[in-house]
Length: 252
Ligand code: PGA
Image (tube, rainbow, N blue to C red; front, top):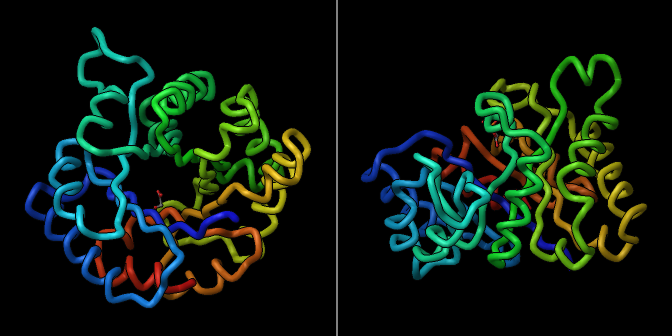
């Protein structure tokens, strides 16, 4: 059965002490929370990963990286390899976030390589994609999302999807306060599941968790998460506050 997941992407926020503090607060609130089945993930910046892993060790909170290089090692100044993440206890990585695509030129071909490397290392991938406002205005959102998924993932074997979580994040809703309506999210998630089903069959499609991301807050999470094909959220701004983040976890 597919899992409900709430993941917090801290982006380039929080120094070491703020990261440890927020991680501990989240762990404490998650412990008190009544929600049993929901997987909770937080993704601090690279430099604070190890300390956040330690700070959450005895809790149910898992720690993810926000990015990763596709090579095992080598002359890639400023980059982080999968083995380095695993060596500090990080087994999950977010790939393809729209900010990586927009500001750092990451394209589908590069992301396909990163996904391959992560899977070779037995890591779990939260794979992000989504259309920009112009695509939605011109009704091309499904076409765009379908090509992002196909180009980066459809070379994989069906079994690989056991380690992949999809995160649909319409770019126009990220950090803007504008959320896709629960119906828009559901329609796209159903389309994504159908796209997977057409390629890999209904069993694979049914098992993959599909998260929604883009201005999810405690006030709108319940309605968005109530949709049948929405299995949780990738949370940016609201993940920087422990109460808000765990309120979103509790939205299930
Ligand atoms: P937001 O960010 O919740 O601040 O819109 C979501 C994301 O970028 O994952």
